[in-house]
Length: 248
Image (cartoon, rainbow, N blue to C red):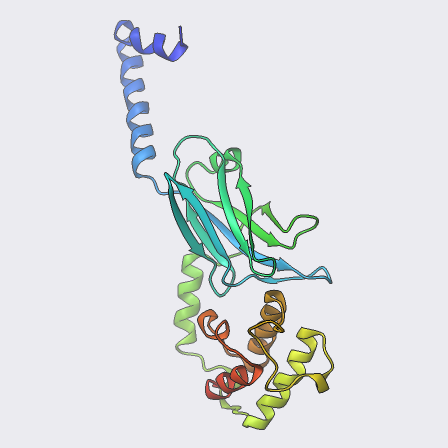
């Protein structure tokens, strides 16, 4: 006979303190299984040839739940979060779309990792182009700032004016700087880069190179280019126009 089945059948014969403790434990587990939200939080990065890494923005992650497909996106800092649907100890299978390879790759979060953090979240790093595998997961604490830290930064940003707020470059200066940045990111001579250089289409650079380009542009001009904007830009000239119009 199953030990659990034997225990439940003989529960009525046991001392009162055993029966009370058992029902409190069952009540706690029932509340946890049905009410407690749990998540797998991650930071998506793309590993570069030089060993460094940058945020993998706009990463598409999906999971299959009871015949339905649920999709999630990493934000403009590469962070993403998916709910732990199953309440029993089992592996969570995620699929990540690799933009450069135009294919889905599976990554599994073991049930042991999820249940190590039974009352909280699981923090993972999603690495694209990691080692011999196109996609891999690494475990550890997320470096994403906590809620109160983010709120504090947002409040302070409303009172402190950035040092770069009074430097508005001309269109020619923006175009020249963009060509140099693009040449480094795309690994081309500056002479081969112009405002007609394609960012979308057959001869366009890889997704990884475009991520490097956008990141370097944001650092240079101290702006944030939303994913929905740069992913639609057809040429380098479009990027120049956006940066020029949105300088602070």
